[in-house]
Image (cartoon, rainbow, N blue to C red; front, top):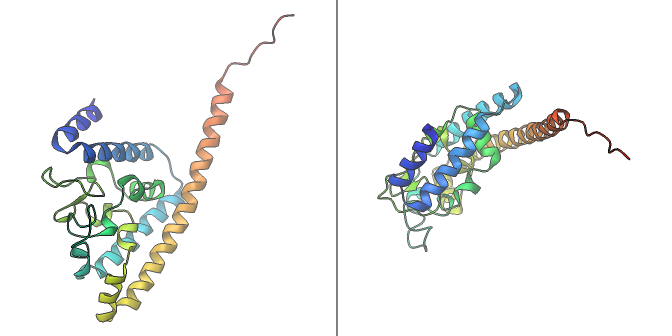
Length: 208
């Protein structure tokens, strides 16, 4: 009942394109929350969030990300930001990203979209004022993307080497998490098949 009401409110409060993406993403988050990760997967998710926050803190004062889309065609130049904010929501939040967010504490209520007055242009959380999500609830790829413009700014500030070290650590954590998550997801599929076969009644042989 609550989920149905939530979906109705999203459709009323948001343009159709954003509402559909948001509803589907929240559905996937709920599905992942119903899974039971092992300790390693949960610990890696928490580590990944910490690495992501470290990188985000280093990038907090940059100016490139607020203007790189100026003059570019839609959807890239429609709002502040640029190519890295203009992807399809389902691709930005792939299965590994969703799992890492969920097992580090993200729930559907954290996935707050921009106001309705912000026309959809790329990711469902992109608006005129930037991303509507707190950094902790953004995919790791959202802070990992460093375009040429941003790299030049970081180099001019003398910060590129330090940030690249942290980006490497973030990338390593994401690859480790993705591998563990895929292995667990594969085990879940096999287990569900075995359970279904075991639960099905044995077929009796036909009489001659």
